[in-house]
Length: 346
Image (cartoon, rainbow, N blue to C red; front, side, top):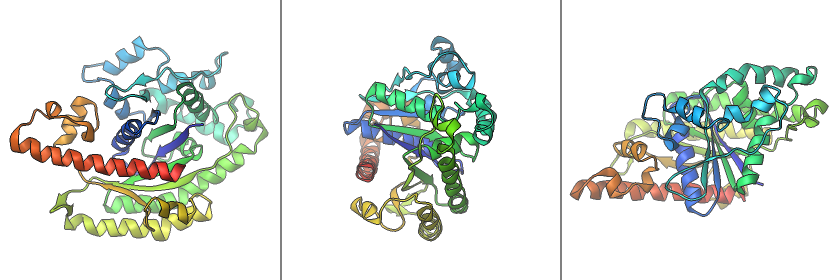
């Protein structure tokens, strides 16, 4: 069965989408089959895979590919259609083998209320019992169809019912963050929210209505993999002074606030597992500085920074030499991240 990993932080602007895309690509390069899921109604991950530069490009894609997005794939549950949820016909990601996308849909947010009601009242309202288990059911069916090793979920910022469901029913989660005061505050918030979500999922899995639904709600077994720190500038090969202090604050927040709360809820791995992946008490998986000008090339080429070629950047001479050094550095960072994910999830 595939390993499902959620990228989650209730703070926005921490490069969840970029992390999901780049990690998925690197895992695919390393021989794994990976399904990416765009569960953010903003559909930024979908835009990294499908060319959406033209006006109404997403609407055209939906029209020409009926049922080929996350919201429509869940319609049998949310609209009570007389047909079962089926494996998604994923969009292959160009440029690498064995990487596939379940596209997002801007209308997914409209299902938030229905799911929220279902997750509170599913035991007493039978018509809602199929909703809470439908997401994980779809992901498992799709992963089985593609013989996938990993399913990576790109989530929106926020603490709504969809994120609650997707995080609580994942196998693992990663917290992308940036070195600023708001990310420190977000970690403190997650230390309270995530144990509460896990308690809800544990109770939900014991309800007869949900365990016996057409799309059974799974027994949760969520574990924290670590943080990915991004969106900071380098000077002389290290983070600038303005960011270094926040790195220390993030590490302290993870070590003294987040990890103890998660450990009490049973949401962390054994200490030896993190140590085997070369991680210390900060549980930082990797630190990734700003892509700077390369992010534009990455978006235009619809491939990760570490996969960019000289032709993609249209650079020459000294400029290309400098960019090539950065590209190689980013490749090493994402190789390290992928290797740690492999170690922690084995």
